[in-house]
Image 1 (spheres, helix red, strand yellow):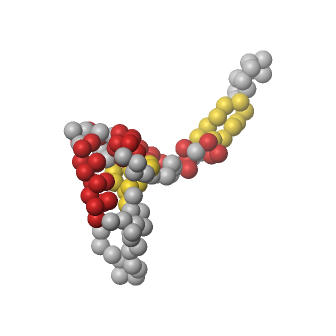
Image 2: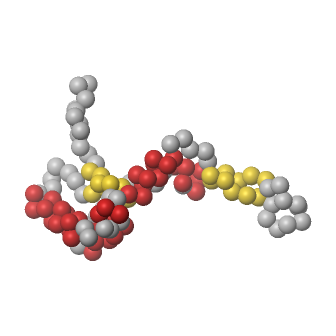
Image 3: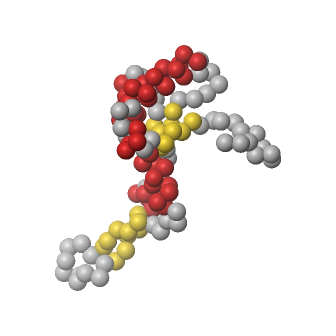
Length: 116
């Protein structure tokens, strides 16, 4: 990705998007393979509209004699499908200025071995 003329990239987060149908493994399989080698990786942040705090409780139209008169609804999200796709396929990889080339190659090799 080209650098914008008004700023400088800091490359502080490295994320890979994994399409299971093309790669042969999903994001979680790759995360587990890295974890088994004591390498920390994690999914991209969970979209806010999927987090429990943003679930809305509202009165139901059910009669009062039914035990559960409240229902839960998800908060409205614009562009939620994009955020959900990034969350489902995105994996944050180890990165940093102190990461040695051999460490980088180790991460790459483990990811390659997940490919089917």
